[in-house]
Amino acid sequence: MADVEIKFEREGLDGIVAVSTYLIDAMKRFGVRTEEDCVLAEKVHFCAVQVTQGSEKLSPLTADETEYFKVHGHTKHERLACQAVIEEAGEIAVMTKEKKEATETKEETNASDDYRKAFEEMPLEKQIANLVRLEAIALGETVSFITNSPFMIFEKLGDVMAEFGLKVEKEAKAASRPKEHAKKTSTGEPGSKKKGKEASTTPTDKP
Image (cartoon, rainbow, N blue to C red; front, side, top):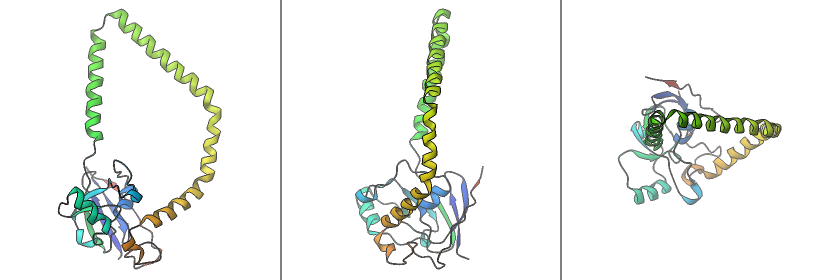
């Protein structure tokens, strides 16, 4: 059996992927996103993760990983998801980094509470004036939407180009893979023992 049970601990997600899957691809298939996309050409990475179980089932450190961790420091079993590929079946657990959005959301909530409190303390006439202003803004956005709606037809053009775009993306992804992995197989899937096997993912939320 060339399948791997993978778990994303922070997100409470788990499911099945195939051997030869990159960690970054497994993350994307489960809806786990990094703060930003890596810029492989400039060796800029945002995909560092902690492999808390099954690190021995991954490919060895690449030259890019060695260089990155030399500069940024390296904790035990830490990997770059865009460089690490699953080479053996079994179980793997991954702990992603905490995202900054959580802090920003808390700040936005505090700002909303402050605004609500300030609104409640306003005199009645100022409350009414604020509500009228907000309604005017909403009406303006509605008119703008109606005015620009004919341009939505161009979205259909994007659908026509989607298949072509996927092909280009696949070729670009293959070209960006680590040099160490490109030598292992002509399919661009290092460690794969069954050519053409697709990863099947069945993510399930866990409380």
